[in-house]
Figure 1 (cartoon, rainbow, N blue to C red):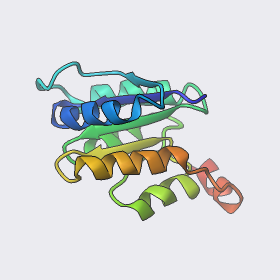
Figure 2 (cartoon, rainbow, N blue to C red):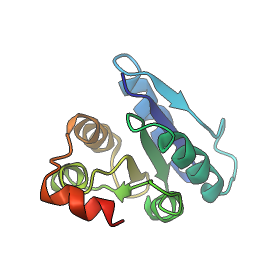
Figure 3 (cartoon, rainbow, N blue to C red):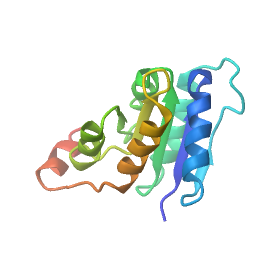
Figure 4 (cartoon, one colour):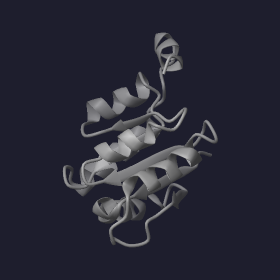
Length: 140
């Protein structure tokens, strides 16, 4: 069974809580914070989550901030973290199929809640294709 970690900053807090409420019935989701929507620094939470995710190949992460971009940039600083900013079905599937992304980042200010949950479900259920893509992922 895979561990799913989730974290946000203050701008992504409400979407984080919504995702947890919609996915926790069928998945074990570990909330790494923050505990409120008071101002925090997103790199701290991206680092915390990416270290957890990269500690085991079966771990996945969900990061939420205002745009999703800051979390993606921060998470990708951790070795073996492959964070993908997802905003459509196609780019979400490709992030897993071709890039073996292990962290999805979302922007609360840019995507509606139902679509965000749908993209997370796609992300978690899509398997890496391997093959020619594995060679490329190993170069990252």
